[in-house]
Amino acid sequence: MGPVVLILGSGPAAVAVKSWDRSGFDQIVAINNAWRLRPDWDVSIHPEDFPPEHRPPGLLKGQRRVEARDYVPVQNAYGGFVYAGGTMAFTAGYWALGALKPRVMAFFGCDMVYAATGRTHFYGTGTADPLRPDITLQSLEAKAARLQLLAAEQGCACVNLSSQDSRLVFPRAERDMLGLAVPVLPEPESLAAAQAREAALGYMVPSGRYWEVEDRFDATALADLDALWLAAHAAAIRTAPVPETAFPRRRSGASA
Image (cartoon, rainbow, N blue to C red):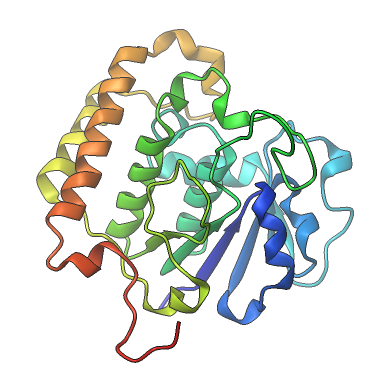
């Protein structure tokens, strides 16, 4: 069985992770500044323009940095950045899916909902990167749905440990439930429709630098594709054999 992976972002609620017991996670993947939250992370992942002064100053035994040269090939194996969504929460998810082969990816601090005033990140006020005008991010929900369904095809359950409002469409979970998490399996016809539309559009940019050729892409076509992924996600929930399989399941008698 694959590992249970925590994908840790920089949302204001992410500070709670400082007191968490590490034993429930096999790997901790910290996005951008999230490595500051606890010292026992395994992977620091960041984009190529992430300021050097914000990166970990050193690595402990077993730790590693993952940069564009590492995650771009993995991302391309899952269809590329245009379809996946060009923001680090999704990039980290696809990299972990391909490189770590998890059975569970648990996201925390990655809700991508930003307060109009006050703290937007655990360290203060930062740039709401997923809300920037970007042709690949017209629907964060659709991009989350795509990640969840492609992960499920690989036998991996995506869950959200947050109790906050979220743009992620993953089932909510508690840390003590992670060992029981099960993937929401795609409904074949709706999944095939979304994947066929991607293939027909052919929006692959091998370098990962999709913004350099953005005039190649049709925003309306990508919005239509988002609608197909949301429909595929709804079909997966609707056609699950029993309702509980849309959510992590708890064994009878397990404590809350």
